[in-house]
Every structure is written in structure tokens, then in C-alpha cells.
Image (cartoon, rainbow, N blue to C red; front, side):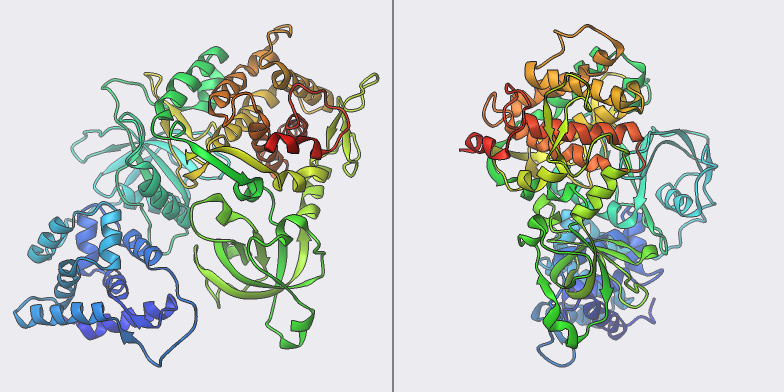
Length: 639
């Protein structure tokens, strides 16, 4: 690497600075340049240490943030810290340190207080050990690693194979023993056993493969919220993500602490399909709730919030916008939209209207479709995913966006509003009621039925504006049956921390109740509305009485046992004992989002919509009958 000089590295650093819209050269840009030297000393050292140069580059970028697109001087000035580091590197070179890449990396580590050093520390890197490794690195080539043999994975595509190849490069083969039921996110989760060249097998690990940005996001949230709070026997991410070059996918490896001879884990979806419902209920309380209560849900503080701050992101995008070229002649006719303003909850926009989107953040990029999802911000809290707008028609080969990037301005034309999207989703359910009415006949219009439920399409905006007194704690953020694993000893392991954050404590349990409704109740009722209403009437009984002891036992009532246990857990987490408004509001919005999940059965989506309606009715007071009324009746519960 003698041919790579400090001058060459500085040139790469300036390109990185331009990409980040900083227009100066800091230590962070110099470090990122080092990680981009293909076959270089920096990348080799991280690879040998089981770390990913690509991930550490991402972590440094995220910590440094993005600039504001404004240039305050011509060219690229060095920051004082960068000048100091470069001077130190030159002194090391003058003393005989080669290659120059080594000297610069040593200088960065010696300075000790820069953005990349903080990123390394947050990623669990021992700086002193790394410094010693860099100084004494011999540059010896690694032994040739043969192509990984993968058995049990004939269905894998080339990108998935590339992820596994990188993740298990020190092994000669792996065997995919089990593929877990797919979760809501569409990721692939599998149980893998790696094998050495001498035939020895290592312990089973759980591998998750998903969109590269989602994998990076999950590792960052794991480091921030999870790593130091998990029980000793649960799943842990022990290494950096596998991020093959030129691949849209990435992977994480979860390892477990378990006793020798224990069986492989199964997820809650599979467990509930083969065990009694009372066993499932017992697991939920004793293993899951008690296992994580002390570090997570039990560390709750009083939290007063507007519902939209925690739950707006569950709903479809507030707008779908077709991007248009910047045109000054149209500026006077455009409506300027900013994140978190009332337009996103109160409507007032219509298809065909011209809009100017200012200061949104890129949350997700769908390059093949030319779509960028814009939200309020990039931090983990739910409020930063509010005000979502999906912008389509972008040429992403010309302008690239990355997750967390601040997008100063995009102009476009409104294609659809949230109301439009929700109405389409409900119409696809083939309802036997008018989707535009204020109320839905309870029981689908069964003769003699006089009760009514609020129509979620007409009430969700009012729900979003409610003020709730609840509790705040660390939450998983996606606590569905596919992300909860059960070991042979009955202990609970969690995976998939992409959305872990500090948030409304009851969010996790509302998500889990909806997941149980979809996975284990809807298959028992068929697709017809009569069967769906039968399940809703049982859910209504739970709302009113807390259980189903007054109902004649049946396979359907048995399917509700885990949900009754979820309610018992929720009762321990309510901010005010016995005041169920807090939970039913969460449940109403968690259930409403199911309506648009086309990868779920028609029965599941129908049940989700009616469960949302029932929760909106129950939010008034679970002891009251569901008669026609107005949501203003519940405002006294919020005082």
C-alpha cells in the first residue's frame, strides 16, 4: 500500500465530505477514506478482528450527521483537529512508519477524541488494542478461504448467499436447519449450524437477512438500547453486520447462551401452533414479561403525550406525491409543507394539489421503484416517523438518498391522501356495511342488534389528537410472534431490534395482541363476516369483563387465552389502574394498520379493522355499551 499517500487519502476524504455536504475535511472524513481503500490495511485489520469496515463507516457517518448544503467558503478547509492528526501522521511517516495509511490510522487513534473514535467506542471496539494491532500489523495475506458450502438453502438467491458467505467466512460449510415463519417486515430469519474444516460443528445461531439499511439501523439500535439490558440467556448480536459490497442486503447473527443438549429455539408463532393455549399464556407472563420487565417495561416513568406522537407512523403515508422538477413559475401555487405540522393529521390536501416539501428526512429508499419515504426525523423515537410522505417518480440514478439524510426541498403533485389510501384498503375487504357511515352496525346488521361501533375511517383523526397519560420505557418496537423465540427451557429470546426505542410502554403489548389475533384467532373463524363478528363479540366480552369465563368454552374461546393474558400484563402497566383508555387507543391504531397488509389473509385484515373499531368504542369506557356517541365523551378520561 505504499502507493497510497496522505495526499491520495485527503482527496478521497474531500469526496466524502462533498457527499455528506460538509465542505470541509474533518477526522471523520479521513477515517471514512481509510475504510474505503480496497484491500487496504484498515479494512484488513477490521476484517481480521471480526468487524466490518463498512459498518464502522456507516456508524461514523451517522454520528457526524449531514450538512446543510450551504457553502461558506471555496474549496475544502481542514478542521483544526484534522490538521493536528495529519501533522501527527506526517511525523510518524518521517520517523519511518509505513505505509502512510498505517501512520494516519495510528494518528487518528492517538488523538482519541474525534467522531470516528467515538463511533468505534460505541461499536464496542477496544481502542488501545486496535492501536497496538495497527502498529504491529505485518500485512501477511490471509489463507485462501474456499467458497462456503451451504446445505438446506436451495431457495436462497445470490444476494442472500453473499451475505452468508461473508458472515461465515471462517467456516467451510453451514447447514440451514430451520426457517422461521416470516415476520411482518418481510425479512428472512433462519437457524444455521456452522461447521469447521475438521468436521466440528459450532453452536446454532439465528441469522436475519434483510434490506442493508434496515440491518444497519437494527445494529445501531441494539447497541444503543439493548446490548446492556438483556437477560443473560437471551439472543445477542455478537459481531458487526455482514454487508457484502454491491448488495442491497445485509445480515445479522444472533447467538445464544444456553445449556448443552438443549433443543433448538422456535418462535412464538410455531410454539402456539403445537402447545396448549394455557402454556402460551404462562410463557407470556412468566418468561417474556417477567424476563424483560426489570430492564424494560418495569422501568416506566409517567408520560403525557398526544397520541399522534407515538402512533401516527402506524398508518399509511399522509400523502403520496409525484415528484416534479423545480419550477419557479409554479411557486405561487404551491403549498409549503413542513414535518409535524397539522396538515399531516387534519387533511385539507387533495389529489392534484401542488406541494413543496421542506426539511424532511429520508427514512427508506426503494431504488427499484424510484420511491423515497420522507418523515419528520431520523432519531429512534416514534415522533420522528410521523408526517410520512412517499415521493415517487424520482430518478435515483442521478440523485441518491440515504437513510437519515435531511432533504431540504422537493416539489411535487399530490397523488393520494391518507384518507384515500385507507378507503381503498377497507373497500378491498368487501365490507357488508357502508364504509363512509359514521358507525358500523355491531354484528354486521344482524336482526335484533342495536349496538354500533365507531367507523375507524371517520374517527382515526380524532383518536390521533387525544392527549393520554401513560408510561414511558424502553420497548422492543415490533413485538410480534415471529420476533419472540422460545428455548427448550421455556425462556424468552427476542430478535429484530430495528425499531427498539424509548416509547409508550403499552405499545409492545398492543402490537402483540394484534399479532395473536392475526396468527391464532383469524384462522379459526373463516373468511366470512359472520365468523369475524363472532370473534369480535368475544373480544368485546373481554373488554367488558376481562375474560371469557361467562362464555361456553370452544376452540375459538381457547384461542383467546393468550390475549386475555396480554390484557392481564397490560393491566399491570397502565399509568392509572383500571383506566383502559390508554390501552384501547394503542390497540385501535395497531389494529387499523393491519387493513393494508395484503400479505395477510382476508380474514385477518377484516378482523383487524373490526378490532380497531371495537377498541375505539371501548376507549370511551369498557363498562359502557357501544351505543352511538361522540368521541368527546372520552375527554373527561384524560383530565
